[in-house]
Image 1 (spheres, rainbow, N blue to C red):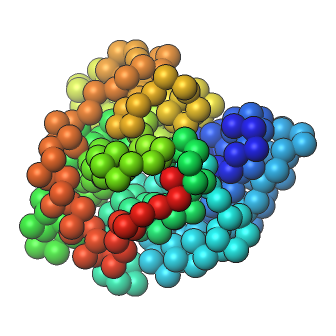
Image 2 (cartoon, rainbow, N blue to C red):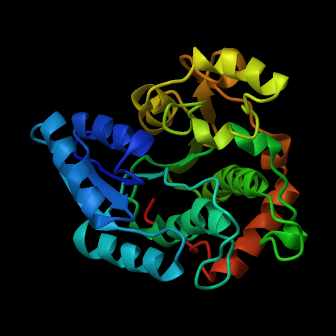
Length: 302
């Protein structure tokens, strides 16, 4: 990663911070994309102390708001120039039904539509002729998701907080696969990959619907998860592997290789067949372009 430029969303804490720190230690110039500039600057100061001599920049990005995504991309063009790596890590979970300024359900907007628009807008900024990567951070929850493209934005269905989260992560992973197909068809050296952290100390709350100690199943799961909860640094392993390892291919998906992929050393992860469905991927892409107003560029630097 020496002399390369990496953008990490949600880089002020958790897996995003640990990913940024690792990349900085490898010599990358790190762009920390954070919703709060104040928390971003605090994280930057911590990173510079933990990785002396590294270079890091904080730029504000609220993935839930289209105007913020486009403003961020303009700042990248003005202040950064070329990109070698984009890590779409930021996400939210467990929020009641809420919508952004253009009416998109908030988890869908933050976890999927924002990264879709960000990625497509930044593609022309990838370093020409160099092997560059996009890494999307998914979740085990994607396997429980349903895309429901006929009601993707939760306008008719009864809202489910976890269902919305699982849908957003399934969409992100289906996007990863379809994006890589399009990149390969177009030629160039940019590839899209994905990762998931298993269950980390930073996100155990995402599985509260499964781990309720008041029922027998919840107690059983809690007993088995407790010994496998990873620290943020450990949970960042699959993302760092997808970003930096040499022996990877576009479309690869990595996670922990232990019991049920909850923790353990990095290994290939099991992807829902829905995420690999080509027809579903094309339909999702068309809907995403319509909802965001952002299109896949005809050509890119990479």
